[in-house]
Length: 114
Length: 112
Image (cartoon, rainbow over all chains, first blue to last red; front, side):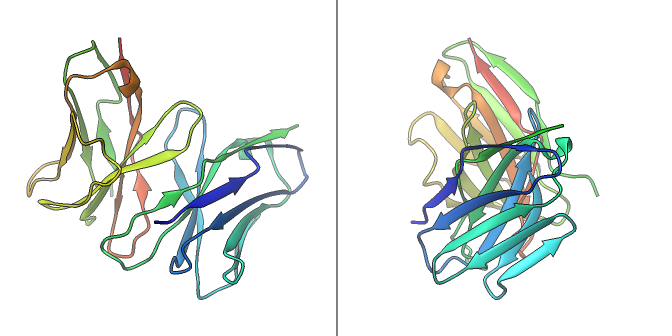
């Protein structure tokens, strides 16, 4: 099955700095990679996703890059703000397969200090 | 369009009792997934259901746990004879055929 590794487990940055979270996956057939943000005591929320037919996707201050050859993908947050503080989870899935599910990384706790 | 609904939001059970967790998917979503999250840990897949069918239950313990998604009504995750180790947040997610999963607010189960 799929195995997703996520690093670092915790990340502290100053407001305005950039933050990068990296994930690797094991199943080369996986082709859908979402990122979720979970604030304390709340539900995970989908913030961005990427499919394997593209190498990069950007949405305002967040971007995701995918390297299919190396089987890794990364979340980039620029100009971080205190409200970005949360736990971020990456995941991998084989899309359009009725018998596949999301495999999550263990999460990265991001702390943005003002 | 209401989001994924879960109830109850908090559930306290004594050891040995049964816990029933409910999940109503978003309108138009026919796929439901259940995950367990222990404190300061990631999301562990438990079971994936479509209407009236269990598609993948590889993450669910073989004993005491069961799940259903009937033709009418919410999906139910049932835990019989709860133990302290069952204390966790249980999240349900639903998805349309395009596969993006949207999470409910979770049920926080505490076993005393």
